[in-house]
Amino acid sequence: MEVSEVRRTMRQPNIKKAPGCSWTELKDDVHAFINGDWVHPKTNFIYAELDSLTARLREHGYVPQL
Image (cartoon, rainbow, N blue to C red; front, side, top):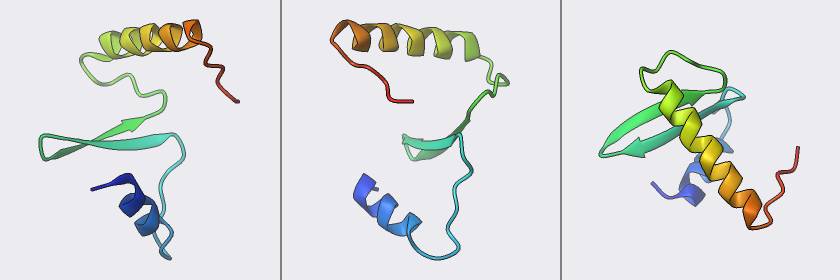
């Protein structure tokens, strides 16, 4: 599903997404990610990769907006 389709669907009445929760589709499976969730067996690896990615983005001038 394309991002534009998802966003259009989310604008329909009674469609809600919990704050701090994201979904991604990988090989026909949908995976949910919840902010602050440390249950996944590879959590440390995932957060290390995110930290590395964030550092690389900042090296190229990306400044996150809070």
